[in-house]
Image (tube, rainbow, N blue to C red):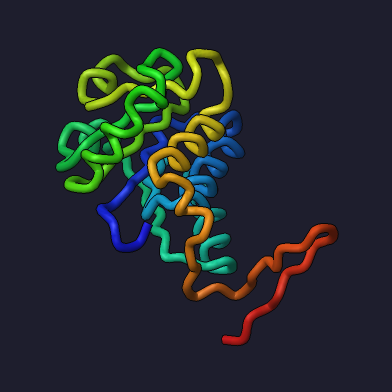
Length: 179
């Protein structure tokens, strides 16, 4: 979120055809819930294009990157690393510690898309579970970011939007903004 240290979500791995929708939703969730950018694997160009399009229409700032060097990104990260995994420590037990560390350092949040090698677990400062049960990595990312930002991400302002959703009790109201 603006005004804080950077939060970057790394979607680790992508199986074209199988993970397209999930990878896109990792990016959309990262954007909507306060991350500054997402890094997708190099073979996830379609997901990157979709997230860029949504950012253009509904506002930012939010950056989308592609890399073929995800292991190097993790290995060389200059900040703290959280790896979201069902095998990690309970989010409610480590959220305060992570939030305090994030005040001083940028944060890389790794979200697996396929079997994650043990080196990711080793490089992570925290291996964090949103429940120790199987579920969607998108749900895990959403809960984690909400805990990290303590709900402040729900009130963020969006710059450069072409459209804005007007909250209503019923119906759908999307306002086209003047440029």
